[in-house]
Image (cartoon, rainbow, N blue to C red; front, side, top):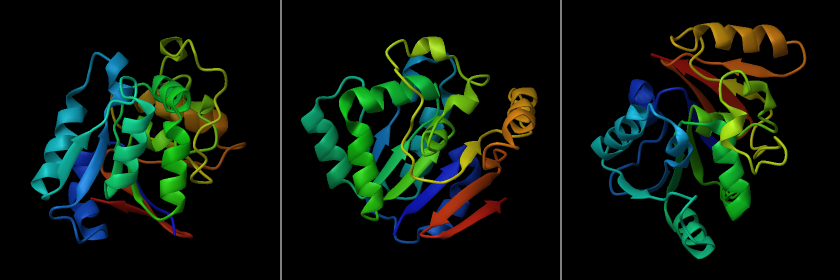
Length: 204
């Protein structure tokens, strides 16, 4: 059964996560900050890490853009949870595909491992990420051949909906694609909780 916790800003909904997944203390989480590697603003990476540690989780960092295939496979398979931070969605997808981490994550999530996706980490769970071209720069992923993503969910997350500095672009994405895509816009205070076939949006 697939379990996903998809958010715009993890620190703002950490209490919802603690309520969703009760048994956290001492569990290990593969923490993937790769999307943030090409961004100037990265405060959310340490904020997310601190929120996880505060809950008693053991954070095992994995930058897939630098790690070997063996390292990637071992960390994703051996740890209890997968956490993918925000940043540039296109660069993240490029590195997931280039290293084969995409398939390892898909297999683990399909086998029941909990996936936590923050912003870019939430967007890549959709089937295709072309809809966020206005939010992220495609130029930061010159090696990306197409926009096909993980396909773990049947909807497209639109993070930071109604929150600055993404207010205008978030609305534009909704206006442009809502008639052709199954969009799930969430603000920084909301989380999409996927528990098998049950999908709910929880808010603070």
